[in-house]
Image 1: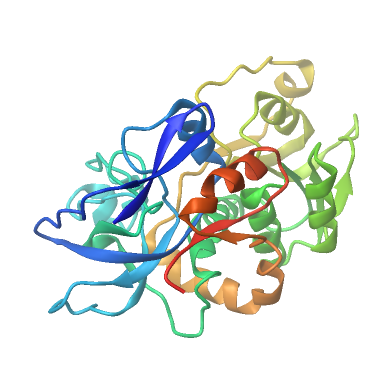
Image 2: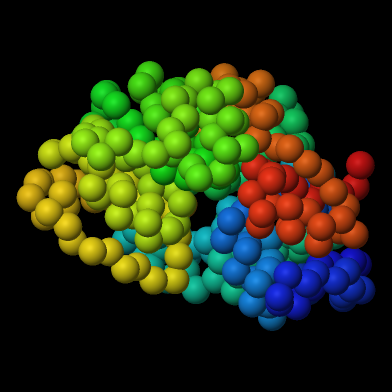
Length: 321
């Protein structure tokens, strides 16, 4: 089969790779689509020992299996089903999970991959192939963060920092849950324009006297985290969705002299999947705006360069037309 090899320094080559070895409890998936994610820029820049790609949609290719021929997503954490977190339905934070698909085990920038069967999420027939991957990070991760925040703040003014795929997904999820006043800041005018087209108020700068009821930090940058903690009102909530290797925050007076809630959200539990499908169904035409390019494996290198430059929102590898 063909697979993408991430060599570092922005270099991706297409190589012939052996078919995945399917272990007990796993199935073979024929990849149809794999969306690019901001976290994939790390292996793009640094290189990676395994095939990346963690927003994977495909078709089960395992004769005799109950899901043979079914369209499915690959749920990223390889969860155990036995620990207290899994028993409580919080399989995304399984304490025994040692592997994430596309990170510690091969991912979806290839024609095939092996998927643990507990990580298969069947996709309804009415969800188009190209929109299905949005049910993972774009809706799933953002949606879980918003659900956590709604335990504290269920209305009011919202600021979204970062208008990449998680930020714009967060915007659409916020609107689904009834938040009507959503400001979005991103230094990239192209991304601010997309946010405006989806009904947000685009900001070229964050007001110095900002006091938002809820702030979604989706940039993964220290400047974004700093702004989030300073811009939230007293007794408001900040949701940390963007990721990076380290934090450096200066505790300014605007942070120190107020009470507020800080929430860190990682991925989503499978129990939220059905509601996430409904979010996609209700907002389908608007989510279409996010999927702005589809390429073969041979086009992946150029697409990553565009994505890294901020010229794409949620492009994807798309195979087997």
